[in-house]
Length: 195
Image 1 (cartoon, one colour):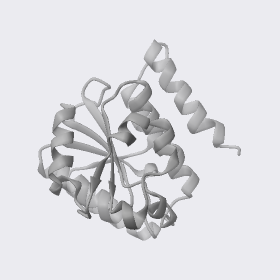
Image 2 (cartoon, one colour):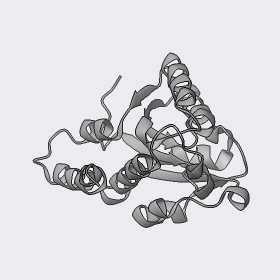
Image 3 (spheres, helix red, strand yellow):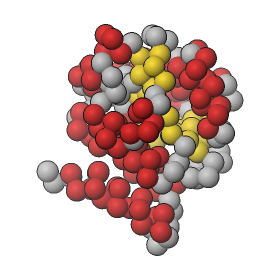
Image 4 (cartoon, one colour):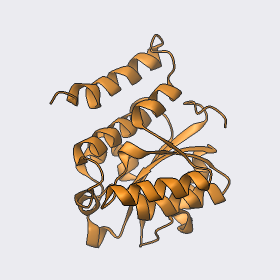
């Protein structure tokens, strides 16, 4: 697999919405939100192409305030889906991802076993290389996450964590971009470890 870099990867945040966050039981919600904030900030502040999507907003609510605050442009331009579980079945979403111009996708979504799963498989079937950031996802049980990740691995999707994907993108914290990435990590993840 080609190494993911800021020049060849894009970030997709799928259905981190008011109601879906309340369904997370597989991980502490604070961990998921912290990693979502980190991914959103990497996209917005370090100019990695990124996309936000939501589903059935009238029923589930819009994307969480953390995304609105950290990636305001992506939130304003979010793809509102009508209920497709595989985002790639939505023409607007598929076109928006294609317009990002990247074949390597960093994906996170809620819930792991429903929209994230089907969308990651859909991306894979469309020819994208996918890394799923597991600690920016969640489902109703740890077992659901485990089974989903087993199936995704079988489909050729790489399962990773927020810190791991950040340090794959920025392998030198001595550069200006590396310093920015490190600060985002310190603010969103490390500073909350003892909280």
